[in-house]
Image 1 (cartoon, helix red, strand yellow):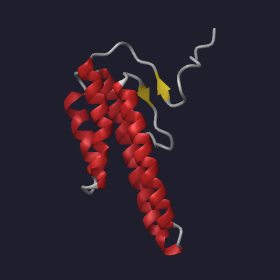
Image 2: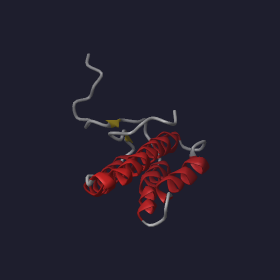
Image 3: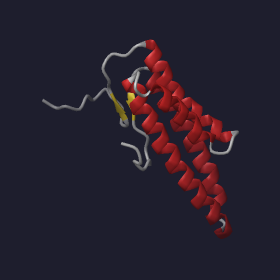
Length: 129
């Protein structure tokens, strides 16, 4: 029997039944990363605070908080590299592309977390478990 469910999209993993509160907090881990568009390093601080407070209470928040943090740390590294590449005239298009990519996958991750599905970001480096 194939262990992969063909109805699950790439980057997602089904989870055990969860409560509405657990799904809401998991979604907030992803949505809080949007603070990075307004506050420097808010993309890391937002999910870090939520994850630290709720990780022991909700397993989905523990998983999705780490996933959001890993992705946002990766994105920060990519943005720093793009800023350096501005001097070679390719950094600005990369920055715009990274911003759009970050926004799109964050919304997808938040929707999946709200549905109780563990989302796996593309292009993320795994720093936390």
